[in-house]
Image (cartoon, rainbow, N blue to C red):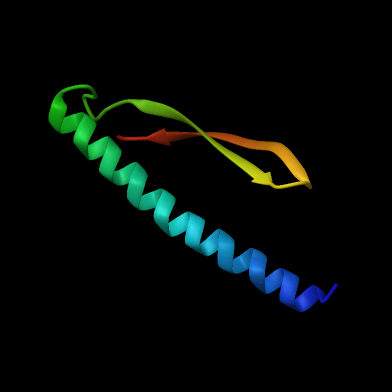
Length: 68
């Protein structure tokens, strides 16, 4: 295994995930506020799940998103 290639692949994936996940969270929260489902003052639980086929079956990271 080439450690540098592997590390760069991980970083590229995480950057792509981070950017797209942030956009989706922003879109979904704005839509929920506009629909009246959220007030915009909540703290929302959040979970990210990582699966690497055949290697990692279920790795989760939990956190919170504060809206105010």
